[in-house]
Image (cartoon, rainbow, N blue to C red; front, side, top):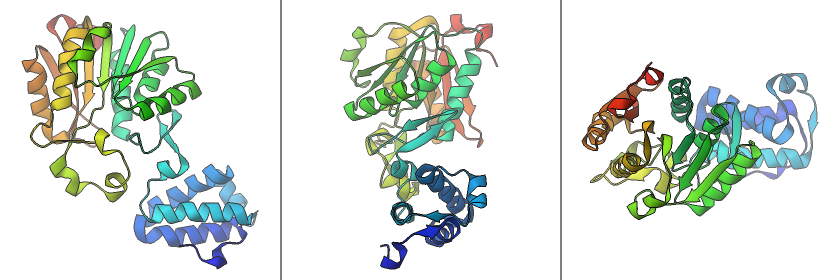
Length: 302
């Protein structure tokens, strides 16, 4: 709750100090400062140097109140990206809302690894399964502008947002509403040189270890899978790729760090003769790359 005394014009310095006191108990020093900088940038157009230079500049009552309300939500663990409606991914930004996940650094890393592996053999056709905000598809299209890029998701709301994000980033992508778990959808799709996906992979039993800002606000359908069948999406993706991946194509997925070997074994059982388990920048099993024997060519080696 914001008190009446807060509903007034303040200097940049005064506002910054108030925000810090609000956020510090919840988010700690470094994260609180980072959030304050982002709020100033979003609502005032101030970068960090300008915050220092303009410390005595007066912020209007309306702007001060708006920023204080945003900080109050942050103090309740509402994700910053859902407050501003914007998230950053690699070198561009996308809009996000409660129908889409907030992009993670691990997913950025997956795209960078994929781009590196595909450098010598740019894919003509790319498919992003479970696109959400569209960040992966947009990033791949920016890396390979001449590719025909398709992105699918089960959520119509997510696809509407992803389409807007693609337009805002000048990325020509075809968005299709489809459920990867239903193989009846498969025949309508063409062949792809590269298939990428960050599907739901957090087991229901792992909710206990999830931060409240994720658990309480991000879409559960995009996060969680049942304990009795945690690889259900990978099974469906592998089945789809078996039918729609070209002979020289590659599949790459982001995975649950605790199910790396199981995911590799699943793809091997589906006929992928070469699979690779890779760690993320934190040293955790995070990505699986799969392709067949005739795809074991120089372009895909490290």
